[in-house]
Image (spheres, helix red, strand yellow):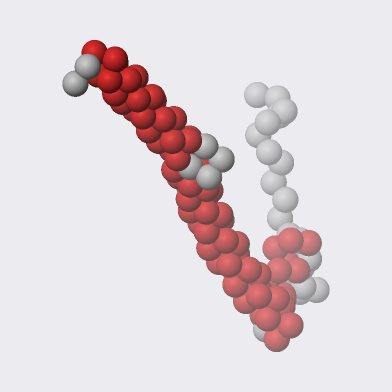
Length: 103
């Protein structure tokens, strides 16, 4: 082989290697590349965990709504706990807090 042919083959091999590197970089980091896929997969995992948490909370809220509709004891508990209501035959003892009291 002549020197000119060897030089042309060497230049083509270098260009071919550079082209392979460019295509590889585009495949890894380009718009539809592996890095983007990994980011999207992580976001999907986070969204699935959030959805599972929301499903659990929704189930709890449905159970509470059902209890408020059908369970008189639970309704009484909520009224007494959240609104501070008492029955006619009950006495409330209120003790002053120790904060702000002279010693």
